[in-house]
Figure 1 (cartoon, helix red, strand yellow):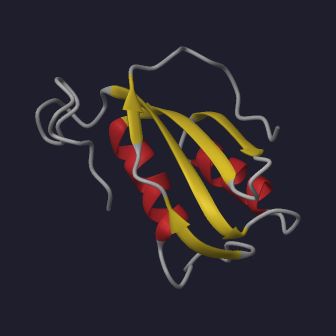
Figure 2 (cartoon, one colour):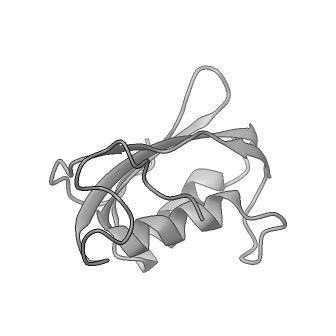
Length: 113
């Protein structure tokens, strides 16, 4: 599973309890628009207790922003990038960008944009 880069102070995996809240942004590329991918991402994120959003980009990718407990965010990143999908993920994921880690913004819900 992806882990926070070591250069981010306070975001190193294992440096703090797994319940620490984090925010991550990734871009998913492949056949991920018009196939239910954002809906699937939202459902998985809500199951994990995360907030954020999933939105289509003009470049054909899906931007996923998720925040919540570090272990839940890492679980979502694993589901987004696993191949083959064990959870019926729609579409075809060709790749997931390196995670961009940040402090949580305190958003509510997980809309499909």
